[in-house]
Structures are given as C-alpha cells and as structure tokens.
Image 1 (cartoon, rainbow, N blue to C red):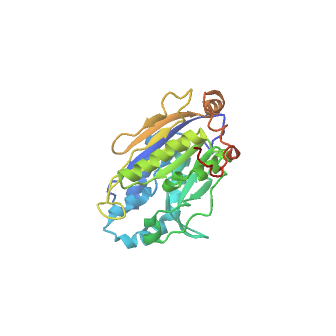
Image 2: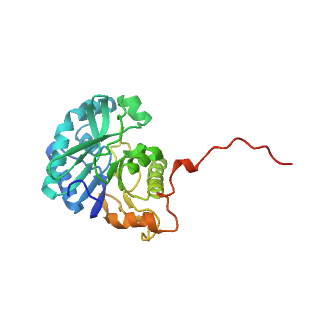
Image 3: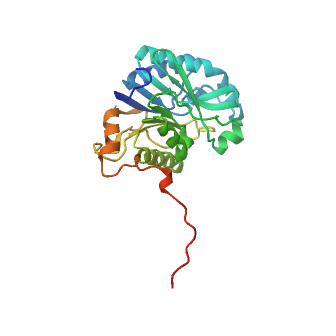
Length: 288
C-alpha cells in the first residue's frame, strides 16, 4: 500500500522490537527485513530508536552514541525503503538521528512501497535528548500522509499536537516510543488511549524492548498495542497487544467503520470537540 485512503481496511502491525546482539550492519539489515516480513501487514510501525540495536556491536560510550549513529541515517532510510518495496507495505520506520535545517533531530522516516519518504521529527524532546545529545526540536507536524499521522513518544502526551493532526485528516495515529521506566511506559500508553478517545481515531503504539545494560538503554518497559476509540462498533478499545520479547500487535483497521463511529454512538467526542463551547468564567462570589 501507499499512504492509506479513507475507504480502506488496513492490516496494521505494531512491532514490539526486542534488542538483540548484532555483529554489524549486515546482521542488523537481515533482522530488520525479517521483522518487516514477519509482520505480515500493510502498515508496519517500528519503535523509536530501533537502530539502538547497533550499539550492541561494541561498548560505545554514552557521549559517543550520536557520532556513532548519525552517519547511518541514509543507510537506514534506504533499508526501510527496500523493505517497503519488497513486502509491499508502508513503514513508519521508528526514528533515527537526522541532520535537518533546524539541527540534529530525532526523526521518523515514513516510507512507502513506491519509494516515497516522508519525515516527522520529534517536536517535544525529553531532557535526556536535550542534555546528552543537544538535539533540536522539529519545526512542526507532517500532514501530507493522508489519514496517517505520527507523534514520537513524548509528543503524544500533548493533546494539542494530535488534535491538530486530526483536524488535518489523521485517522490513524502512529506512536513510535522508547520508555525506560514503568512510569514513562504508562504515560505514553495512557496518552495514546486518551488521544483515541478525544479524536475518535486509531492509535498504533510501538515500543522498544530489551536492554544494553548501560546508557542510553539500560532497560526498557512497555508493550506495543493497537487502540480503537471505546465506542460502538469497537467492543474492546485495545484491539491487540504484543506479548513478551520480539512480537507484534496486529489488527485490521476499518476506516469506514471508524468514521461511522464518530457519528453513531451515544458520545461523539470528535463532533463535540469545538473549543468555543468552553469558556473561563470570572470567579463568582460564594452565596451565604
């Protein structure tokens, strides 16, 4: 598939990528292709910083990680394009360090089978990304993906970002993430579920698992999931969730049913979203 259209049923997969030792680029390349092939989906979402797996090649110092991985941006993007073409799928290919006009960013390549590449940089950076790597925030949100939208990890915790994407037609929000603690894993998951409720959209949450035993990946928490708005006709809001280890959450996303759900249930969050409904009133005096 190319970038989706709204009259499709899309087979989607959120990859629960578990870090494993690799000997070099060729080893990682084979594993990447195997993972995409095994996803058996038209839309595959990989986690944030998937290529941290390459740090298993050697004991690379924390402050050298950026210099080690930044030169691989073109190779990684070419690999994602090759996988998309070979297996006929659109890939939200995790995220990588990328040099952009605003500086070095944490950016997601979104690649299609016909060879197109779109980019979504992370707009709101964690303190670690700012302090350790001095990354630059992305300039804004990509809206040229049809019904797809991307918010990387921390970005999904800001309702105004996903609302803006939804206002520009996003029906499937893709959330590549990497979370080290149970608190951060829950923040991202609960935020993803909140965005599904607010915007009555599907959310695909893909997370990185495993560890290096050192920074920047001492350990990880979380699972991958595909989330629907909790309204009819969707019986369960979590359509599918990954198991332990390298695994997948898969689901068929019916965009027609999603649009019908926005108009047909007892609550209609999307239709009732208008900001002018809300007004801050002046403080009232308490009655005696």
